Structure formats: structure tokens, C-alpha cells
Amino acid sequence: MTVRLRAHHLLCMLTYVGKGYSPAFVDNYEAIAARLSAGEEIEIVDGPDDICAPLLCGAQPHCLGDGVIERDRRAAEAVGALLAMPVTGGTRLRPSASLLLHLRRTFAEGDIRAACSGCEWSGLCDTVAADGYVNARIAMAATDEPTRLHGRCQT
Figure 1 (cartoon, rainbow, N blue to C red):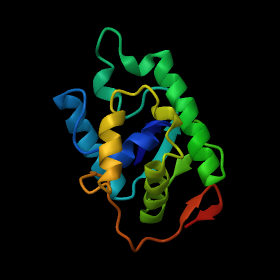
Figure 2 (figure 1 turned 180 degrees about the vertical axis):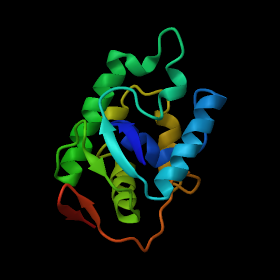
Figure 3 (figure 1 turned 45 degrees about the horizontal axis):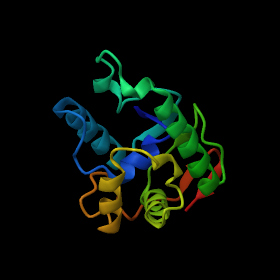
């Protein structure tokens, strides 16, 4: 299977510690965190994704808002620059310890945080990163193979 993520959730997954908008949201995210930790492939999608699913039932889901779409654009740009590849709808990534470490290190340094501006969870993410991601739910075995991203090898 494949985990469908919108671009800004590539950043959110780095600091997810079991907190969220509702119990249903947290339960869903816990299942997704387990799948990502197991190395399930990620497919970038435009718009709502697997993490958004529990929030789409409301009258005005924020997942459809202009601010969230802009957050996706900024995250895709920042992560794409970091990985030296386009991050657009249809891009596929294989989670690995090396990829996660690279993203987390850069996130903690603030280099890929432009998309986080104005996010209500930004303070929590600051704390998680400052604490070395000790309680982050997504973790990978450190003995993985280099990650293949669209034919390029990323270590």
C-alpha cells in the first residue's frame, strides 16, 4: 500500500507526537505513523490526504482552505530544494532512517520551515525538534538501504 500525503504533511510527520484535532484524527494518524515507520511508500497528492480523512466530514474542513494549499506549496518547494528533486502530485518517496534524519536535522535548523508560518501547531513542533524528536511517533530502523527517489539515490 501507499500512504497518500500532501506536501506540508512531509513536515508534520517529522514532529507528530500523538496530538491532534480530535480523537479520530489522532487514531488515524497513529495508524499512518505505524505504516510510515514500517517503510510504506509515500505518494504526494494535491489536496486532502490520508491524514486529513477524519477532518473532511465537517461543514468547512480547513484541509480545503487557501492557507493550507499555500502551506503545501511552500513545503513542496522547500523539501524539493532540499532533496534536489521536484515534489509535486504523484511524487513517490520511500521513508528511510537516512531520509528522516536528513529532514529532521534540516527542520530543526529551520531551513525547511517556511510552510509552518502561521500554523497553530508550530510551537509544539518547535518543542519536539528542540527535544531531539524523542517522542516523535515515526521512527525508522537505522540500518536501511539508501533511498531511491525517482532514480536518484539519496543517503
